Structure formats: structure tokens, C-alpha cells
Image 1: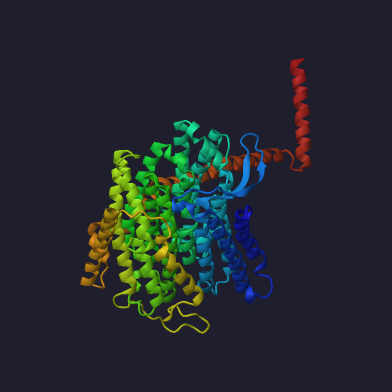
Image 2 (image 1 turned 90 degrees about the vertical axis):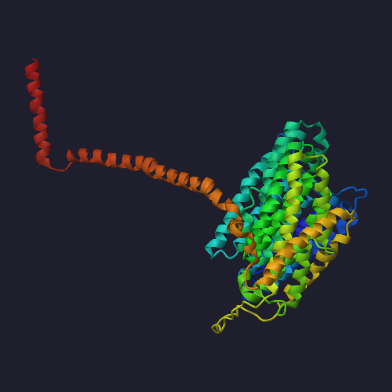
Length: 624
């Protein structure tokens, strides 16, 4: 069992290698089928091993009982000349729990993608990149050394670029992939330096050694290291101010959105803070910064979601908001509540994205203005989406009700200490406001998608050999089965953890969610054809544009950098290349002058010789 963490990482990695190298061998028409088997079977094996590891740990992280010893092994040491790198993989109570989330969601996405991308010619590489993405996240989860963890952290960035830009023929998709890559890399610069500061301060990059050395580290070292790490967390988990890449990442296939939003990439940042939680709690200023980031992110993203027409962008901003909830729980001092919500969020957000994929597959569009009345055509999708939105709103008895209650209890407790008064008050106030806004945007998306008059317009009969855009049936079984299975944990997972329900907080939370939902329902009922987002009034456009943060970055960062780049290019062309070209022209001019004396005219040579002799003779006579 000590090698189970290694095997769990290697299985999807081997699937990625085999998918890239072997799936296209043989008959071309069977490439997608071979790729599907190569992707699904190793992922299922990794899921079995991850569940086994979590069972061995007794799911202790959420149970609140004694935590068993980690399971794993060290496979060598890299000598660097200063602090060595330990090649350690291990599963403790936290990593074992996250391993289950990663593998099960990845398995659901792999199975779902078989139907979603059935006729895509690049499906083999797509499924292989998902396997590599899964392996990279598992390496982050099971790593026992910070630099080993960083390897998986960076591979995830590469995989997100490749998968978001899967349909790269569309320039918008390519730009979204590049944006995600660059913004997350910006945060990763700080993350790497944070690892160096923490590792050198502890004298080891082993996570266990780093945490053991935290009491002996100076406050300055801890604050500097954790603030640098927080830059990487903000990038990977799409938190303020590095959150702008995530909504644009919806350009990728919908199953990839489910994978990124539920189990990989964005979950990594929250996991890192929980993994190094003693270091963060010892750095008080960092926790205040995290609280302010979380407060602004949760409410701002929820308001942005309320104004979006694209269903996937609603869910994208919802993810930013929910991750900010988890960050707020961490800032309030409860890593257990944050990870509990991370797990439940992984279940219901994966469910919502896969249901969105079914709706988009049926309608042929992402915009809710082109949907409506779909509950009769898509009864399974409607029921599953209802469960997902109930969990997102935190309505009982869904899983989100229990995990969100735990977060709100932790944030309320922070008012009594742990954070500065201003940060704690801002965090708790924004959390309560976000509950109401979440109820509003979830109800709006649910009503506009499944109720009201149908707004789907049938297209003309396509040419022979061209698939219909609009289908009047539910999706294939490969898409419906993962959705049906994910609906179970989205509804019931909250009962799996040891819950200490705070009745007053729970009542306030549910009342606020229902208040937001009720306001939207009344507005929709008055005019089912109109968008309830009109209630935002003058704030609608700023919310739809996500408060112009992208425009601000474009004006302050992108345009000056592009102008500087154009200036450098002009300098290189005019000054550097101009000097080279000028030296060439000067050499040609001088050679032209010399050529006058070497033109092949014998008479000119003799005339020059005689003139020279005459000058010498005259000079000799004069000087004599």
C-alpha cells in the first residue's frame, strides 16, 4: 500500500503517453474508440486506488477524529548543493480525500467526453491531455516535497492551455488559452519564490519538515513566503486580482470546464493553503490579505454571474465566487470547512457543467436567451440541474447546505478574533450578501433555461452528411450516466461528514438564499420573456462586464506592454539592424571609390604611372 500514491499518479500518466503514441495506430476509423478505452480504464484504476487510500485513512480529515499516519514512500533524493529535493509521494488524510475527488471527477469527465466529442478528429489527443491533467493534479495532491509538487503545478498550466484551446481554429479560443496560460504563469512566479523562501527558511523542501519548522521561523520569513505563495494561489484558483482568465476559459469543451472548475487547477490553490495551513495561520497579515481577497471575489463574481447571458460564464463566475468562499473559510481559520466545501463543490459544480453541456448539445447555443422550456425535452438533465443549483444555493438537504453553513460559522467566529476587525467584518458581511446573490443568479439561470416559452429556433435541414445542431432527445448514455451518478453526492454528500449545524446561521443562510431566489422569481413571473437581470438597473452593464477589470488590465498592463514591445521592435529594426545595414552601405561606398582605381583601363594606368614619375622628379629637383 505504500506504493499506491505512486501508482495512482502513474496510471493516468501512462494513459496519456499511450493515448498520444498508440491510439492512432491501426485503422483510422477506430482511433476514437481505442483512445476512449486507453483513457477510461487507467483512470478507473486510479480512482479505485484513491478510494482505497482514503478508506485506509478513514476519511479522517472531515470526520474530526484522530488522524492516521501518512502512507507513502521516498524514491530518492536529488542533491542540489544546498537544500536537497526529496522524491516523496504520500497520502495523508487531506491528500487521500482530494485524490478521491480528482479521480472520480476525472473518470466522469472521460466517460462523458466519449459522447460529447464522439466525432471530433482530435479526440485521441484530447483524452490523452485529460489523463495528463489528472496525473499532474494527483502529483500536486500526493507530493511530499514542495518542488515535486511544483512540477505537477506547472504541468497543469500546460494542460489547461492545450485543452482550453482544443478548438484552436477559432481565434477567440486560442486567445483564451493564451490568456489562461499567461495569467496563471504570472502568479506562479511568486509561487516559486515563495517555495524557495519557505524551503530555505526551513532547511528542507519536504512538507512535513517545513511545517515542523514553522514555530522556529521568523514572522518576516513566514509573511514573505505566504504572500508569495498567495500569488500562485490567486492565479490557479482564479481569485482577485488574477481571476480574469477563468470566464474566458469557457472557450474549451464543456467537459474540460467541469474538470478545471471541479477537481483540478482551481482546486489546487485552495488545497495548497490547506496543505501549508500552519504556515499561513502563523502569518497574520497574510490571512488578512486572504480575507479581503475572498470578500471582494465572492461578492463581485456573484454579481457578475447575475448579469451573464452565457450559461457557462454564469457557472464560471459562480466558481470564482465559491472558491472565494473557501478562501474566506481558510482566512477565518477553518481548513476543515474550506476542504469540506471544496469536496461538495467539486460534486455539484461538475454536475452543473456536465448538465450545461447536455443543454448546449441539445440547443446548439450557450446563450440562455436562446433556451427556455427545456424541462419537458430534457427531464433527466432538468432534475440533475435542479439538484446542482439547490446545492449551489445551499438549500437543505443538499451537500452545499452543510458545507456552506460550516463556512459561515467559521467566518462568524472570525469576528471574535483571528483577523483584524475590519477584515473579519468585511468578510462576513460579503459572505451573507453573496448568499442572497447566489440564490438570485442560480434561480435566474434555472428559470431561463428550463421554464418559460421555448426560444429554440429550428435550423433548415442540413446538407447530407452534416449533423443536426438541434436534437430533440436527451444526450447519449455516456453523457447521462455520469450526470446521474454525480447527482447523488451533490445531494447527499453533506451527510458524510461530521456536521455541527449551527441553527441560527443555517436559518439566516437559507432565508437569504430564498430571498434572492424569490425576488428573481417574482420579476420573471411578471414577464417570462424578459431577463430578471434588469433588476440590477444601472449596475447591469458593469456587472455584465465584470466591473471592467479586464478593460483596466488592458489599459494599464496590456497596451503599455504592447507599446513597449513595438518600441523595442522599432529600435531593433531602426537602430540595431540599421547599424548593420549602414555598415554594409558604407563598405559598398568605399569599395566604389577603390573600384575607380581598378577599372581595367591600361591607358589610365600608364597615365597614372607617368604622373607619379613626373611628381617624383619634380619633387627631387625642387628639394635638391
